[in-house]
Length: 298
Image 1: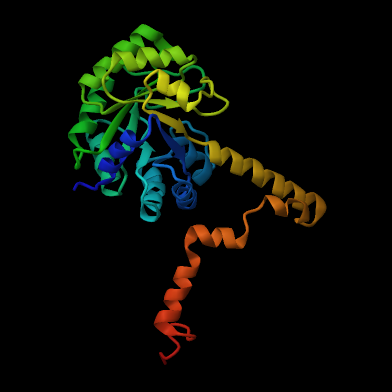
Image 2 (image 1 turned 120 degrees about the vertical axis):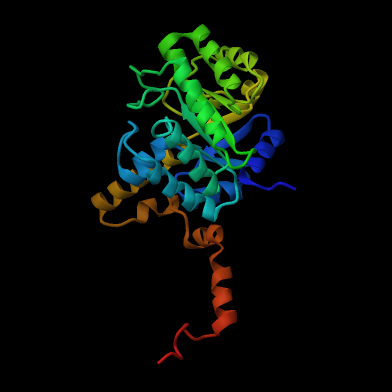
């Protein structure tokens, strides 16, 4: 049986309708998501820029930057990982290199977008998009480069905010014809917009439910009613982590002690549970008893 990451991602699409895909900005949060029972996880381009480099989501990170975080996640977690590759980082051969590198790193799926190279956050104003032909060429290059036929190339469009509904629907039809395995319709402002999108194509469609953006926070039942296959929560945990960290830092700074925030912290035992820490200790005891490895060397 095929058991590649791409295959597991496609299987996840069959298990839940829609499948919930949560953002994991590092390997540890990926382990938490796996423990909770999610079927797929996501690495956001904004998450890489914000969390790993302290940069805004304005296309300043590179393939190698994103690949490093993706590899850390896939090395630690078995869940299929969807990765944001922005515009693919260049022309046809650059896009092909990106897809091959992601697939070789154990990534299950990527989404590539139709913004210009100097991109902006999908929920910010003044976005610019490339021609429909240029985006179709990006998709063709990505699909052609797939080492694994089950690897998923998803086409993201930001066209609703730039051109309106009908041009956006024309675009996603062309993107599907170019070989896109799925569609990511960004910054929808009404549940009925998704009904138009899912009615225009035959491939799975993703809804991005990022907080504080243009899209309302719909339930999975509401999304299922309009044919959505994937519900994405790209930075929910990251935002909560940031708010919690800010509270802890302020409290310790102001009070000189962490007592008032200790109840909001994960305990050492809980940390160890997700890491399977005690299994590692047991292996050391099994191999070396009470000795430290290397004690007999000298």
